Image (tube, rainbow, N blue to C red; front, top):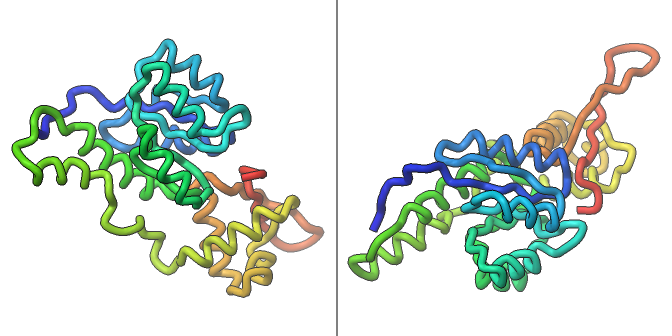
Length: 231
């Protein structure tokens, strides 16, 4: 049932946040066997690209400014577009997950995520995408479908925890003027060094930015800002 893929899997990144979109395009380009063929910031822009470009997979943000991602996926199916979808979202509503299954959503990636998380999902999708022909039996069907299911959540860097990452993310999102590592540490109740590790993780994931702020004396402080307001 398995076969080789002679052409790279063509990915369209659909993400309204420009910084995140650029990061996702970069991530896709770093995974062997995949190529980003375009990026769109709205559903309408994505539709225009799909009309003129062959796409195998959409990396689709569910919260677009002009349409909900699942509504957009439904309209694609109605128009005869059969590209698969990896949904990118901060929403954790399992009802949305169930609805997405019927619309060709093969994976969900929760924001914020690292390159390693997306790479794992893309590699698993490539295994599923390469499965062609007729299965010899139930086991082979199960293996093809099982390629999409990670055995466990993608690991955070050593020493970081999901609950603390959520708290740091929440504090940073609410700080319109940005925060230093010390400010985050005080708000969350962790050390400054630990706070900086989480903040740098968010920067690497494309969800936060940082810039030096110069005071009157001493070394400049790094101020971190959430780059996807309203998400």
